[in-house]
Length: 94
Image (cartoon, one colour):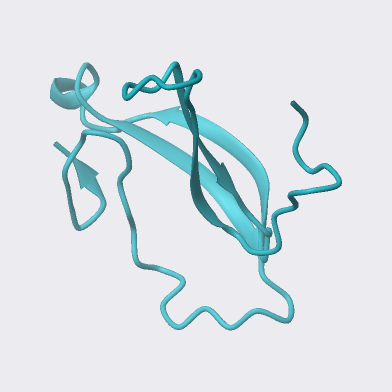
């Protein structure tokens, strides 16, 4: 199966899940999660830098980049976020 196809097309950004069942089975044969994004900003020149604090080099990383967000309002461009399983406090990944 290919998506999009004649019967199905994605019209909005978001998180999706495809669940496939074999005939008359109650448990799925396949579960596939995916995300569709409509990029509103572009990340320019991403680079990973070593933290300036030597005692934290095994724990922290800095990512340097600039955002091209012409035509898209960003209320606080200096707020920092973490992702994945890490926690963030003021942009410091823990």
